[in-house]
Image (cartoon, rainbow, N blue to C red; front, side, top):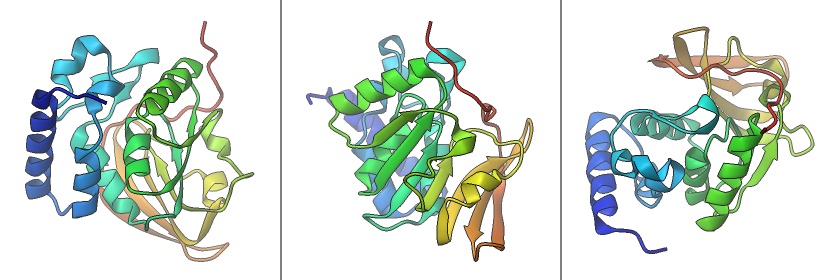
Length: 215
């Protein structure tokens, strides 16, 4: 894919600033340098793609701030070949980064319009992920267990059904709470026990059950 140099330069600059701001693993930064964020937003907003802030996408949703994507991805701490379930595909930007890291990626989106947009975006850029139009609260038990689960929307409480779909020692990275969320890393120690680490407050669009048809 041909990409104008201006986008490559802007992407490099913003990611180098993020790398200086927080202890993000080099492999996460390098993976993000390879993903053209402007391809996951409305073309009319392309020149804003490397502003480090959320931007609107279809279905009244947003693409997350670049720093937030880097931080959440870094908290997963997975290895190449590990399986990860993403809740909230959106337009596919975070999905593409997980693919760049060499993970086996599964992703659920509740908005049919976004599911279709993400599928087109990822196919165009030749990223291979299994996308599902469905309810994120249900997860994908048919493909479980997962080494990691990444939730890109604010869950009101820890989704216990998703915890069941983690491997032992697997981790869920999720913003938990109503309104303002606490970013949590929830590690599954056994079938009955988890260990929780908190990583600061954020504000995400809410995680909602059910599916929304595109009309």
